[in-house]
Length: 436
Image (cartoon, rainbow, N blue to C red):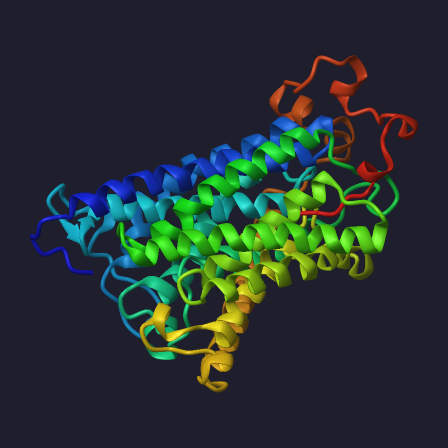
């Protein structure tokens, strides 16, 4: 990473400042999205897992994460160096491309934050909060940081040696969070009553609000990754909007055909699935490609969220079904729909590029998914053996809000303690548990 003295472009800087704020907003949006999907007895705990991730990841990123991700490669394309530990050597006049390096570092920090927060959805309702506080910083350094260096860092092997493409985070954000979520839910085991009790979302308006904030923030996530106020940012912006729309429509179409009811939860989930899939590809595909990417993700992910019941892994809020599956779809379809006008060279199968780019995308997906799963499983097991990662049966039964945080989200008598609501007062569409 060059820190040579240069002048930052004011337009690019202004856009990236706005984009950074948008991406940071995504984590509170995710907190609402996840919080609405759990039962009343664990709402606050779910919110806390996202919000505390902001604090934990920020400290780790400023201490060592940024240097290990974007410092000069320490060898083999696997990890960055220690030249900017504690953000040393980076002042207000340092420039990365056309923006201040401090702003670039903050923008990238927001990606690391939401990736950690995404993992929490896989273990909702049953993880010890104290164990989560230990897990997040260790995981950020051992899982997120290396993969981010591979994909975006100077000398990273996926970027410079393999040549796989990932514009805004399909590999280090979506696939890493999904594979890590799968590993962690296997470490903790299923929730009490999994596949027996109804575990429907308790507040669908809250879910929709969270999805709306995520969608809004995603424009900063994807278009901001152009690192400038330019045509590429505009194309990524439009692709993001288009894929979110077709993802929503694809999910609703499947719900209507399969279940006879298009649901609000399905609409929120489908939009997120489309946005997940377009994340790696928004800077590589045309508008037509973006429409197909979103539609494919919405339809496929609507089926993928039910795999947990067949394969017996309790991914509480469908991090695997939406973020892992959607991330894989979006990353692989770069090898099919990439166009020279967006990539500046690489082309997908449908545009005369043959199978070469698709093969590179496959290698990147497999290696990142296996690495994230294996290392996360190891971290989770170590914490479980030493500190205990799973809440006690009493805590889980009563609810983590009351037993861990000494609070309840709602002053509804027994509802605040997580007692079940009669199914007779709940519409049929709300009795299903799918989603992201």
